[in-house]
Amino acid sequence: MSKTDTKKDKMNIHQKLQGIQTELKAPKGQTNKFGGYRYRSCEDILTALKPLLAQYTCTLAISDDIVEVGGRVYVKATATLASTSCEDDYTINVSGFAREAETKKGMDDAQITGSASSYARKYALNGLFAIDDTKDPDATNDHGKSAPKKQVTQF
Image 1 (cartoon, rainbow, N blue to C red):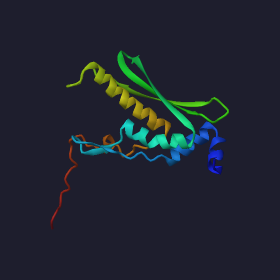
Image 2: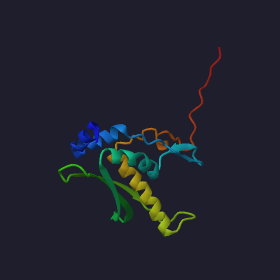
Image 3: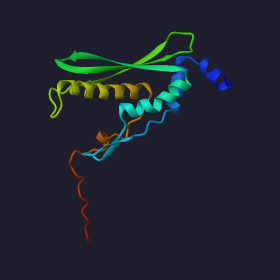
């Protein structure tokens, strides 16, 4: 065991989370063909996370609950980070929510729930690991409205 491994084993859960957040690189590995933008999936995040979880001797669990809020059904995903080497039993939990669509063309009920679960899990992971999505397509999407054309005046 190296000195680095020993040092990481003595970190508390918050120090380990900070290390993982600092080192995590989860590139946007997917492309939305309709919108033409890049995004990261839950799977992209998990692929990038697994080596860091091993390095920091941590485990990650993600669970889903179905909740009703104001007559609408949501999937509540909770991401829980725990350490396998800390002497304390502290965990850190962050939840993300996604509303189930009542219907979605080409999807059965299980697929609709699965889609909402994936979305909620992605945002729970984004919250827990401080993944910045400021360049997300909704932030820059003009929703079909083009910018006003500049008028050039000639003298």
